[in-house]
Image 1 (cartoon, rainbow, N blue to C red):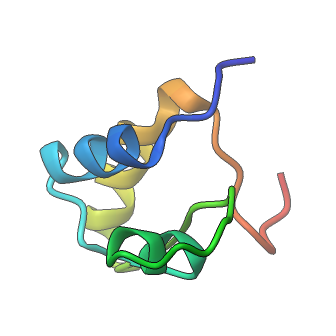
Image 2: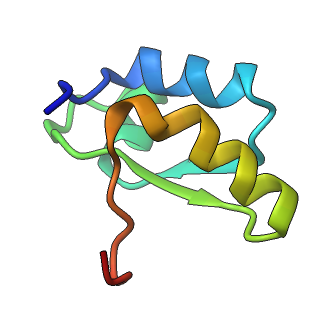
Length: 71
């Protein structure tokens, strides 16, 4: 099992792969200077075919799982 990427690593991976996404939730607040402690990374991504392909390719080394999607 591969370790989960840090926020900086994840954002860099998604940017380099030209994935269209927004960061939401607690880590978005932290990125904007909030002192709120959280450990999960919530990302909303564009669901068009090209973007999903770029997302899957970019994150495949981290063996991600999608919320609410069967394995």
